[in-house]
View 1 (cartoon, rainbow, N blue to C red):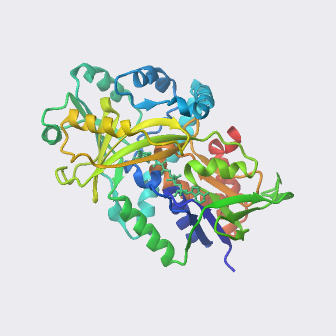
View 2: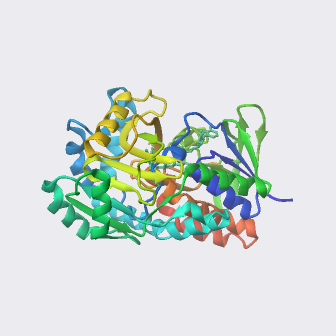
View 3: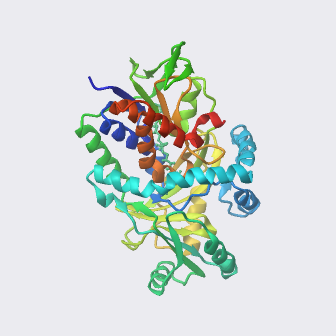
Length: 433
Ligand SMILES: Cc1cc2nc3c(=O)[nH]c(=O)nc-3n(C[C@H](O)[C@H](O)[C@H](O)COP(=O)(O)OP(=O)(O)OC[C@H]3O[C@@H](n4cnc5c(N)ncnc54)[C@H](O)[C@@H]3O)c2cc1C
């Protein structure tokens, strides 16, 4: 009989992992309440950001905070009503910016990122939909002459991992000039990054691959419960026992593997097993419009001074911004969408306004590294969440890591392979908190 896996959370991380578990031979059930508005996996900017190998918990981010918080149009928000969430987070964030921790984080994130684009290629090939991945890089644009020299020297020294930066060529400057109605002060091209053609196409391909191979979906919210006890796993004693999934609409399941991949809601699930995880909702906002006037083949454009990324999808064009630290369920701030419109207008972009409004949560941990590993409280629980700004980028490589963690067991190769995988993922273990 096939071993059974239940994946909690059908965002891009859970969906990619569910497909991976299924390929590894598990009879897989994907549980998600399909909340509205759709979560971050549907609302993101679509950028495969393999160039972002430095954790955002850095001294450079810390130094840039006053400028980003105290301006007329701040890109970061720490709302007073969310202080109970962001104050403890801010303390842990400051600790994580220590140079030694930052360097360790960069090594770990860089190693994951090195395989992010190859994992995306394997993922879309397995979906039979290679057209979903567009490897065209992206542009970075500055509009103020005063920022030109500093930006140039910053990007000349920047480590983009497998991606690289160069100044935009004359035909590219012409395209950007036509877009904005004036020449940029500086434009760079990043090569080696990518974007997805469309979220709806990506999730449709995932769904048809998953269900086509016998995967099952359940529209429900899941909780976790754990039986007391002591089990032995991989030669290590684990305090606790096996966890069960409790479905909101009734039913209790105790599968061989439970994957917790519920984005920002993963912390509550992990808490019911006894894990305390300092996850925060780092919320972002977007406007989506039909995009009739936006050039068809243009890769994503990042307007650096405006903290704005604009991406062309099959279904339209999307302008995304803002880092708002609060609880995931706090009301959206309508001023954010107003300010997005002001930025689009100030830049003179061919983006039809008002555009459709969306807000959603990046699941962020204070050191800006994801949490990927095996629970030490429940022997059948694996977790993969906390991918902050990089969940789309890292979903396929995370799915491969999840399969590797249990791969030894699944393939009958023994547990040595799984232990090797766990050692490679040590930097992402939630025990670090
Ligand atoms: C504005 C914005 C722009 C972004 N741009 C990019 C980008 O360009 N590139 C990039 O790589 N990343 C980007 N990100 C980040 C990226 O979107 C996230 O890191 C990623 O979507 C996280 O995926 P996830 O599957 O972990 O979580 P989510 O997308 O949040 O999905 C979690 C799922 O779990 C479900 N769930 C929650 N609780 C339960 C429960 N109890 N039981 C069952 N299911 C449950 C939810 O319904 C949801 O479907 C952006 C984010 C934002 C907000």
